[in-house]
Each structure stands twice: as C-alpha cells, then as structure tokens.
Amino acid sequence: MPPAAPARTDPFIEHLLELLAPAAAGAPLKARRMFGGWGISWDGLSIAIVADGRFYLKTDAQTKAHFAEAGCLPFTYDAKGKRTEMSYWTPPDEALDAAHAMTPWARKAIEAALRAANAKAAVKPAVKRATAKTPAARKTASGKGRRRA
Image (cartoon, rainbow, N blue to C red):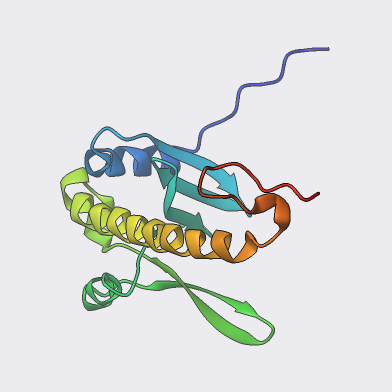
C-alpha cells in the first residue's frame, strides 16, 4: 500500500496565517479543515474561520462595534428559515493586504477569544459544584471520601 499523500495546503490559508503571525506573539497558530471551510486557532482558542472563501475574525460585545464601524460584515447562515448571525466578522479589505494592517484586527479577535474562554472557565466550577452531590464525590475536610458502614 503506498504511503498517504502529504496534506495539501491552501495558499489563501497560508496567506492568512502569515498575516495573523505578528498578532500571535509567538503563540501557535493552527488552521484546520472544518465544515467545508477552515478554522484558525491561536494557542488552542478559535480566533477565525474561513467560510465560502471568506475570512472572518472572532468578535464579542466589546469588539463587534469596531468591525461594524469599519464596514465589515458578519458571518451569517440560514437555519430553519431564520438568518442567524455568528460572532465572526470580516476584517476591513485593506487588512488582507499586509500584516501591519491585519494586526489590530487580529488582536481584537484574540482578545474576544480570551474573554470567551475566561467566561466559560468561570462557569465550570459552579457546574462542578452542583454535580458533586453523589456520595462518591463528597469529600471531608481531610480530603478523604466518607465511607458508609
């Protein structure tokens, strides 16, 4: 059986990774095929997607207005007869030409991804506490589980 062919890279994705690299500040950037498009992550956090050949950066309540004011467009899709907007917006067209123009927009995406990750992390301990009601999960002050006789 012949060895598997090496994965082909997409020139547009390679270009985007080069544009995003200065904002990444040495943290790893990865691109993966995802749902017919691409997902781009920074240090394990999703910061961008490519869908239908278009590039979108992660946004949140704090950054969305910046993108809208710059004339950027949101990523939307139709589901069950309803248009849904995701938290990803295109950067300004000029940002696709040079890394120095992309950097402030990429930093906004990284900041939005960090805020989203921190918000999830803040919710997880509360969920774990609520589910730790089974006898095996209960711990005494000494850190050892209680035994029933």
